[in-house]
Length: 303
Image (cartoon, rainbow, N blue to C red):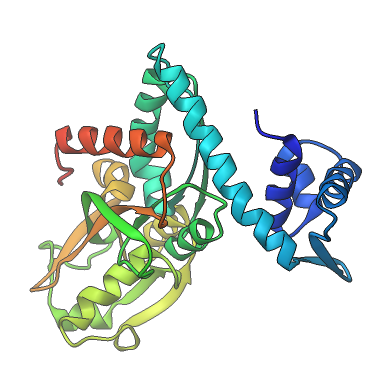
């Protein structure tokens, strides 16, 4: 097992907070301070600069972080491969998934994976696509799963599933009773959308631009940062919304929301794995391969 002091330092360096490091590792803040002080004494170098209530890495701290990152990755790879000798998949995977994937797409795959690999240590955080990319860049997660458009040139984006965004209204509304809207109707009717930074909004904006339409040309009443909130808002108003088919399948089946189409406009996007540059954790590769295989076998969602 790697020196626990390195784990403490790594968490403090990534969070730039002794308090958060203590929370992450379930130890006291004085214990964090003590471990950091031991490392500083060992290497005869200051690792953090104290700036009021904040801390920043020194040059020595940056160097130690670089090597600690590699040491911890090698340790996880060693742990994984040694257990493979007994056909036992043991390892850690810290994932981050954007809202639609985390709530409506990933859970069945995650349940299957944990059933097949019960000794895998998996955690997942949830946020919009840009938050997940930022978390991956900061190394607080090992793997991202997002909807929408690739933005970070140094990252690798691997599609694993196609998704279609659907225009919907409350089933009780008299909007588009034939199931179709003209472009003019679509641009005039009130609309509720996901917040800026979400993969959903990025995909919508991308599709509209291809038709020469900008977001400001639409009658947007409100942006909401939660898919469930958008569904409930739409069910109780005369607004349209645009959400993933995976997110609204139950409401459409129950007759609460009604899907609509707009002539010559289709909102589609790829759901992607996102990886930062450099060597990948063995458990990360295993999970990607597993989900891609299941996704290929799954029937597309239609209604």
